[in-house]
Amino acid sequence: MFSDSLISELDRGLRAIAGVTQASRPTPAAVPATRSDPADDALTSEERRHVAGLMRVNHVGEVCAQALYQAQKLATKRPELRRAFEHAGKEEEDHLAWTAHRLTELGSRPSLLNPLWYAGAFAIGFVAGKCGDKVSLGFMSETERQVEHHLDSHLDALPPHDLRSRAIVDQMRADEIEHGQAARDAGGVELPVPVQRVMRAAAKVMTTTAYYI
Image (cartoon, rainbow, N blue to C red; front, top):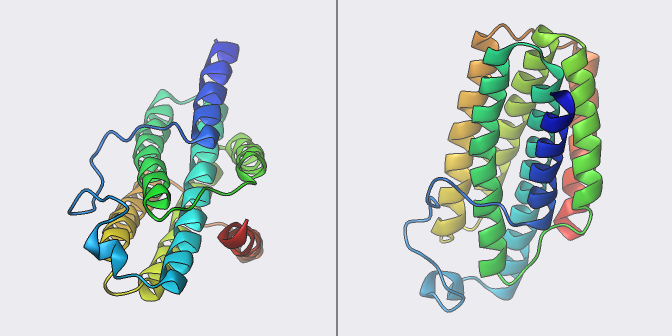
């Protein structure tokens, strides 16, 4: 039943917002970290704050990804698409757990506005889903393309010696590329340029705010 699925997905969303998500894959970081690891000690206080800001932005992105895929999964009537959204959502759940753990290692916290980010993304994802499967998949493709570019910029901005954060971001980027290609292969259409621009503008507001709050 739809109501049962909705309750299940909202429960999953609450766990994502609360930061109690468990990863199904081990963190890409090569060495399990503690607050006293030499690798993190090599970060200056300014670098640590900057890395924490970037990882908080990435964590927010994964909260939004959970909401988007949950909403799109509820909106479609095709079982194969539900499975595709579920698969992508599980990998995004790994990203959510990895970034949350990295924030803890850096002595920082997730965004205080996570409930707002989640609610907004869920609404957008459900509307995209109700516009039809091709549009929904196109939205997924464009979202992942923009996230890929965003993660490229983070790889440029992270300190070269912060191998732990870089490994996490690099694996996230690889997964996002795969998700975007899967959406295109499944029949996703390219969204109109004005829609793409609105998506980039909304993402800019979110990333700029989440870096600090």
